[in-house]
Image 1 (cartoon, rainbow over the protein chains, first blue to last red):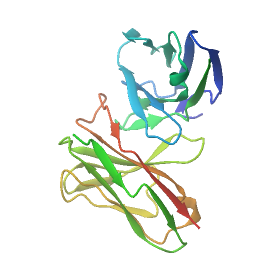
Image 2 (image 1 turned 45 degrees about the vertical axis):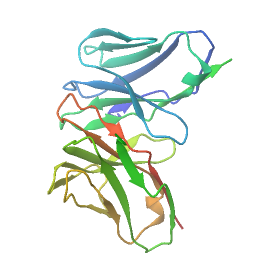
Image 3 (image 1 turned 30 degrees about the vertical axis):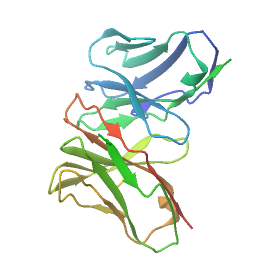
Image 4 (image 1 turned 90 degrees about the vertical axis):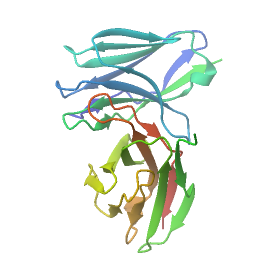
Length: 110
Length: 114
């Protein structure tokens, strides 16, 4: 079992729809969870982080964490073509190092 | 602030050659990291540093070496390049470590070994 798992996609959504990106992790001791966005040929940039169970909202982005189910998600409301990118889930493992998933490719269709 | 900078942006090496990938940050971060990203894969940690003079291995350190003589700079050395080292290399830095570890990434170096 991979430490951090994501569906590679592509996830295709129409413009204006809600995109839902999911991530599961194996280490129950993980304490912090990050979502990075990576455009093709560019470096990852941090979108959101979440530490506590529940939802955290920032503009059009909402991160959701469920530690009991070892599940973290990212919702993007009113998706725009500029949101088309690979979204990387990262989790702080037992050694406090970031463990990255392989990413989900999101394609927002105009 | 320039943030995290990396040079070169692109490089082609022949098998057996050596090179140093440069990384610098101007955010006064103590913690710095080197990752590699292969196509369709997540980032894998090569080496990291918790401060000047202190480095440690990550998940995939074989074939690489690092040094950290200053807070700002964290070069990655490839000795005897092999085709398996063809990848995109990202340097990152963070203010803290531990569970609240927000890392900031440089633009990357795309390396091809032929």
